[in-house]
Length: 305
Image (cartoon, rainbow, N blue to C red):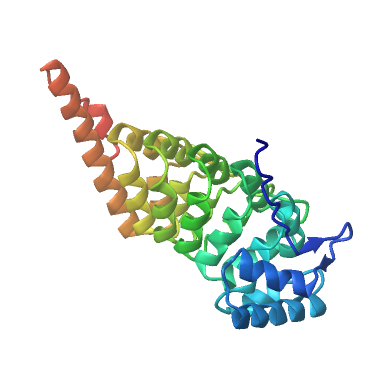
């Protein structure tokens, strides 16, 4: 006996070759009722809202939908009504590139932004949405660092660990800033903590060594602005041995983060960096002692304290 044919799900919202959104209102209403489990009244209301969006904003329907903050949000309904194979192209056109995504991230609840990212079928497609495009040398992550820790968390949770590293290490073309550099420069310690949390210590260490165009690491950029909370997050994100190395990296002018803080008269940052350096040196020496049974303090290590 032949197996019964699997009914094909029809996706009522289409994207034409020139980027115009089209759909049949009756088919969309049936889709909302049969596939998305809305009742007749809810489905009819949603169709009216989506019809209005499409009619008035044929090439950028995400933006006005975002501003309304409706529940259920039309953006999510639209994405569930587009063929999955077309969603990546659909989102790119409707968001309007990196700048459009940044706009959506700022004015959209984090959960709806998560739904947009998860509506595409693979990590590779999500990465394509989140990386640089022709309109900017900044990624979405660069642009939302000062927006909210919640959006950054959503972005990093939506991709694999390997791709998290890719996004966090991507540099701007001009200053070679990573999103971590920007968080440190502007003192967004909560965002910095969110960026450090979902990656391994080894990845954190690699990212925190990356220099910008002037040789500044994230720790260097925390120092001249007195970003003590960022300094704490960095110091607590790596091992003592790794921290000692980060504290000894010099910028293009030959200065360590501690020297930069001193040159800029950021006394709180100077004292904090000195405290962390002392604790890290003692911790490493004690670890060596435990391993060998011999005290291995090197007085030279403490010359700059």
